[in-house]
Image (cartoon, rainbow, N blue to C red; front, side):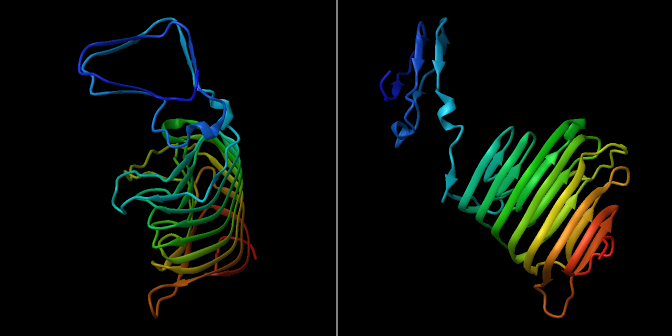
Length: 278
């Protein structure tokens, strides 16, 4: 089939029968300036049937690279993530500007070998690993590298969030060369994530390990600049904070760190991280 869209604008009963195979073009450029491949509009009563197939040639997009994208949503727009990544590997997101009402980028279950660089995020909820483990799910994320990103006026910056009661792992994750401008929660690991603030009472959790925050600098909108809230039952292991300097955006205030069951090392870090070895 040639690269063209089929548009039907009829306000009558329509039966669209597919007897053969409709095959999309394999050339990505053929999709430029196309809103849709098959589009139905203003129809009251549509039936699609037949024994045929629609082949969208999805495999041609599997190795695509998202570069220099601009995403803009209002700060209070509900649940408007910029980019969500799930069940994917070897993905790069580069040089992108995002204004969202939720996560600028969320890296979810089944993601591995993800490289994110040159992101300007704000407003929004930062770049998040997760959430993982909701409703007792087994979720995994590993080999994530986030670098050279700037967060301006965000609710979070570099964040890992997992639910109590889940299982699996989030490991081999690096945030480095990060610039923070007047943002809340610049560095946060929340192993007891629950927006509804309900204590599940569960003893299981997604294991968080081998996480590095390196060369993170800037100003925090709150005095709490580093928040390592790890589960009492599982905890976080091999956490490394190096060359961190986060000061308060509020004149005369000092930043501090809160820790719970986090284990690892720290070097040249402001504020001091009392639960990690120096």
